[in-house]
Length: 85
Image (cartoon, rainbow, N blue to C red):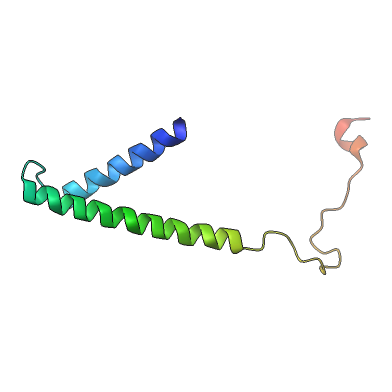
């Protein structure tokens, strides 16, 4: 519920920015058409950029290479130090 509300607010804020930056008056039907075109273009580029970021994150190699030879591996510590045992 919270995520959908945040998404709705961001989309609404984007619409307000488009209206204010282009000085549109939505009462006029021709300016309403300009708003719809601008907003749909903004949404399509937003989704395209989101798709690019998602594909980059999915393709990114998150695990360290297996042939690291022990470098970068956190050494195992004695649990008694941390738990006072």
